[in-house]
Image 1 (cartoon, one colour):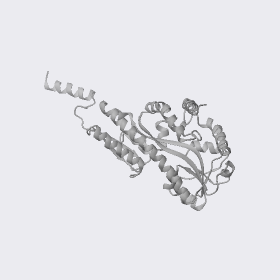
Image 2 (cartoon, helix red, strand yellow):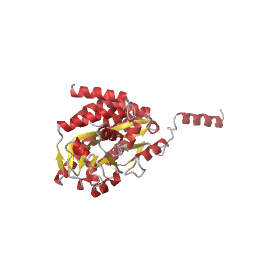
Image 3 (cartoon, rainbow, N blue to C red):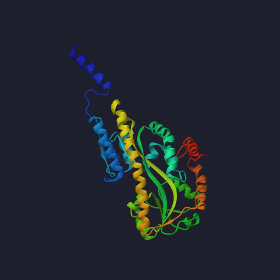
Image 4 (cartoon, helix red, strand yellow):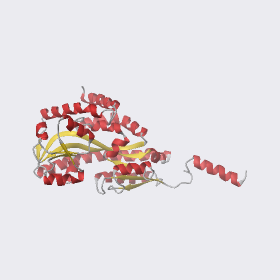
Length: 332
């Protein structure tokens, strides 16, 4: 066989094997909105250190923090075009990667952290299968936390909420909830909310406690209701192409490292929210305690708004599975 033919056969074999025999380390480029120094970034850094050590440098992680790669929408575009291999997401992208995960974030679904902890392991395989069908491999799920209502006026009933200037945040499901409850909302970009609170053009806003303190809303609001309105999750995801680029022997190592670090992150997120609520109270923000009446009222309007989002935002299959799991968890 001539040298030319030999070279051709070797070259073809290398292509069929993905070039792994001569290729250098695989670098996974991952972007996130989480700022440097945050607990989310620490988890990513810890996973990076673990992966690079465990694979002896065969898999390297490059992290782009603080939104330097753009919004989550921008990051998804860059993943699909191969500029990035993955992301750490806490908002918009989760609903695109795994729309059925939105079922868990529907208003009034979870009542306690205990329900969350018992439900997630049972529904996670289904969610990961749906993400995989959309071209993504889930490395680990992170907790964003429970959303509360904060106001310049007391929020102790549905009627009281209707009597305030309510933020129309970019959450289709909460907007459907408000519409079902005949709650008029005022749209505003999240970056404009603090100014709106300062001028009085908004009086009631929503979000996780840590985020509310981080953006200084606590300096303007005087009340919050202890009822948990929604629960939100995030996660670390690689594109299928990014996942497949990892040499087979190292894939379990990579996934286990990300999964372990996200599990270690969740209690830190919860503690941060507990501390944020305590800090608000120390600053004079008054807790309006949840009552059976206000919970019943919100559960009623949540049920009324369900048909507006099921089979649009998330599938009925996902909702039915979630309800089945919750019944088991609650012993109903």
